[in-house]
Image (tube, rainbow, N blue to C red; front, side, top):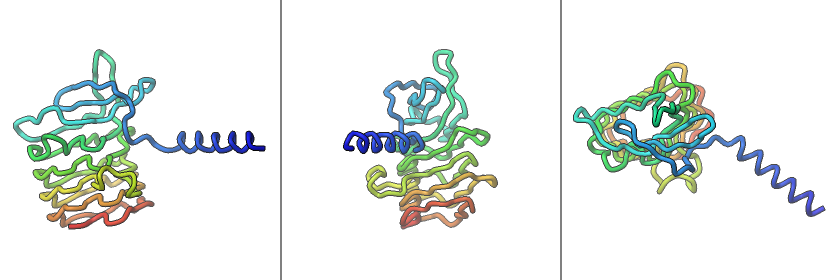
Length: 196
């Protein structure tokens, strides 16, 4: 009886984890291309996440591509890790363009843009399904995806947005935010998404 129950629990956990979308890289394989550092998250499908900004051009504009090449292998960018944009160069970045026509760019992790004080507007692509985490136990240091973006005045979502989940504290500390219209397809919203 005990073996059957243990097997049942194990299978249930396997099913749960196979249905849960990956939002953070577990690989240590990294490479730099242009201004961004990428982390390979899936060698079979050639998926990468943006892990960090390596340098900022004089214009302050960062462009996140749909696809990126390393050692003659083309990878698809699937999302932004925590602190990927809001890391060492956060105060030098003035704009970020995300892939508009990608089917695979699906998440923006907690603290991805934390402290980017020079960005005034953001457009979230239609492909993004999840921004941040709902549970306060899971997010990075309690920081939402766009936490502390004090110059951010407007956030827009693509007309055909597929956004389902908006994490806790997503816009915490975005004191200049005046325009935010959430898409109707949103099904999960964390606590205190706009504070400060």
